[in-house]
Amino acid sequence: MGKLPMLQQMDPLALQHYLAVGGILFVIGLIGFISRRNLIVMFLCTELMFQGVAINLVAFGRYLNNDLGGQAFTIFVLVIAAAEASLALGLVVLLFRQKNTLDANAWRELKG
Amino acid sequence: MEGILAIRTALAAASEGTHVPVVAQTASDNALAPVLILVLCVVAGLGTVLLLPSKREAVLRKIGGVLMLAAGLILAAMLVHFLSGQGKGQMSIYFWIFSAIAIVGAIRVITHPRPVYSALYFVLSVLATAGLFILLWAEFMAAALVIIYAGAILVTYVFVIMLATQSSPPGSPEGSEVGALAEYDAVSREPLLASAVGFTLMGMLIFVIFDRAPSFAPVSGPSAPSSAVNGPGSVQVLGRYLFQSQIVNLELAGLILTIAMVGAILIARRQVIVTGPTAPEVLLGPSTPVDDNPHSIPVYGTDNPRQKAYPET
Image 1 (cartoon, rainbow over the protein chains, first blue to last red):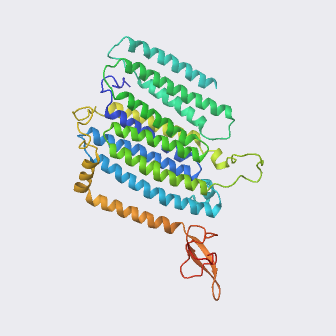
Image 2: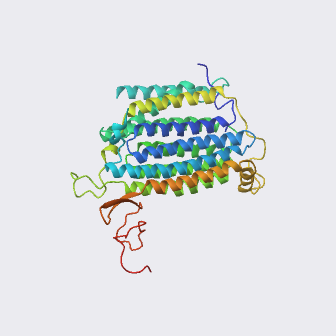
Image 3: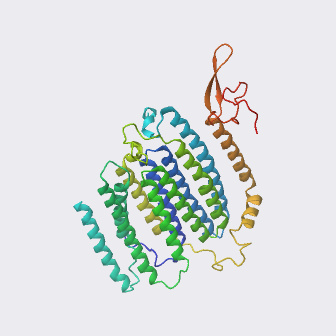
């Protein structure tokens, strides 16, 4: 594995840096989604994944000829995130009413 | 514990080893050698494992926090050392500040045991992301992110956290003013496996991004748009683009929002058992609890038994 042509042969602020930040946010949200048991915090981590994706989209739109499609796509991602948050929280409230707990392990019998 | 100390000493030795060539300004050496990045990922992964809620004592969690802090400080020191050798890059410092705040906020979202604090740290992460959007000439997106995410979605989350938190369990002492931590908040499932998978993915992503992709330069132009009104990411230009090129998607987005609103109202209804003329019948009541509120929403087709007798003021 040779040396990576990192920061010295690139612009000080290249597209790759924004992609890396987006990727790191996405992966952190993924880790939180897998490992937390509170249903609400799990959905909060999916919102974190949306943040990473949004950074990637806007960075691509900016660095590839100022294409506004990146920002338009981010608006639609925001729309989907809002719709998903409302429906998911409604479902969480229903699940909480059933078993009086926010534990994801309380629904273990749903596993195959 | 000895392994962690060995890793830290190896990290210090590696950083010392790479600092000297950078000072000597040789073109072939880089500020961030790949081995160092991988070692930083491993250290950060270990710190995350220790920080995730678990049944360990508080000492190990503090060690996890120290490990993360050490990895972050070493990275920051290398970056400052590298940036001081650079002549240009006036916007770079803001990028590093915003991304550091966003990433630290994200890590605290997933590792804090209390869900309200997770939501608050997520607001911090959203604000830092909005700052990154401003650097990318997307001012409307930054404002939309703050308004929609931090202003609407996170407020909804905090409301639901408030509604769905149980009171303290019966065995807890009466003197605790802060609610006891529920068991599902205190213990996370598979922190080791989750962190291993996640940080492997992160290492591979960073490697591929920086090694395989060609370097893109932003479109030539002044560092700030000459006119803020007609700049590339302003409201006018974005609105014109949306309504000229993406009109179908825009209408579909409005349709999705309407469907989600109707669906959310329908999902959260509760069943109301009302004594009918012959037998008790089950109706679907509103999600708001019908209680002493005289303006409570009546269930259609029934006599609302809880409604007060005086007229609405």
